[in-house]
Length: 483
Image 1 (cartoon, rainbow, N blue to C red):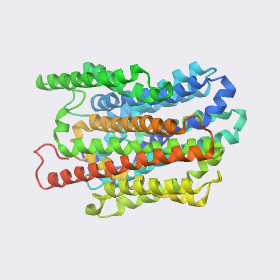
Image 2: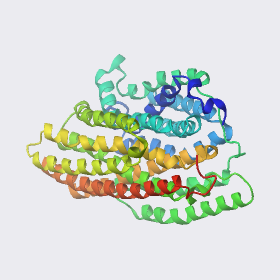
Image 3: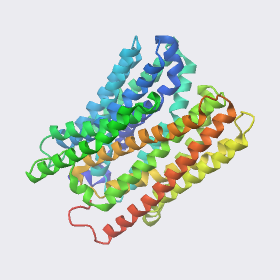
Image 4: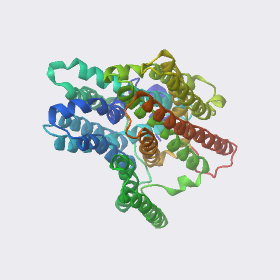
């Protein structure tokens, strides 16, 4: 690590804004197309299956490529991969905006996912490398704020852009808005972002890339597509096949390590109990992100709100997320250790109060009580996510920052996809063929109860991860595993 990486005074004040602006647009694009669905149907004749793939194509290539993207940053240079990812994502956004038919749009969304996966792990890696341990909580706090705001405000942004319909371009603005952000980030990157790479990783493990992609595909494809297809037999076969594929991946990584090579993922990272449990905590916590997906369905289909009005209903949740994300880094170190656990518990409380509010809303209108009941969910996630990222990554040596960051973001996306699959299945099974407001409310309430159970489980797991972190601080961790 060079002097620039340990001396905050030498970092440009634009370092974090340039890193986080593309992060915001990458996360927004996971969610923003939901509000564009009716326009895509009317303008380019997208079928229901096409609309599903417009959403799924991006999520699949994004999630499947994150570990590889992180390791490529270690090998080729993190700034170089950050720029390549931003450029690819921006170009793909242009292709999305000019797509003449659903097939072209789906292909461009696939490319968007690859661009996001090349860029996003570098952000976490560069924070890990460029900031001292004392500075990281604040940087990760801002990162969590950006990530959460992007997820929560995507509907507001998408609904507003489509409603404005500037130059008659309608839904195409959902993708065109990425272009100036990407252009600014590319122009500024060389000036404000120093280059860094791992000194020990010499080449990309192509066999590991293939096996990791296979194992992740066997989880992600059925998780994303299963509910919409009615869970055919092949989805369960794919889930089962993921186990031997993962075993083969681990075996290949061990062989490469034993021969002195550079594996895709350093398995010794998982020997640290705090990293292992922290990664599982992040996966389970991201199951709760499916709340925002189901809330959108309940507001628009159950209560009959427009896309813009539905997006505006997210505003109090967004403010709560912002406030709690900014509060966490200001607390003392000892207090920050407890924030992921407290945040997950607060989110569970918010999910339960939302159930009470939904059941009390009998006339099909959205009430102030319903909006306020959801605020603890946003506040809890804002408290939990940023310090949990720091908790997971602080056990990782800077030389492996890329692989660890890619693994963490992949775990988050798996949690997100599985959460939508599991909770979505519960919701639609409970709803059945009914279209009444009461039926939507009952189905939403059952799904919220399942999400509350996930949030409480995450709280328990985070508590165990925090305890192992305390053991590490006391000297229990083997030499060489600290930061």
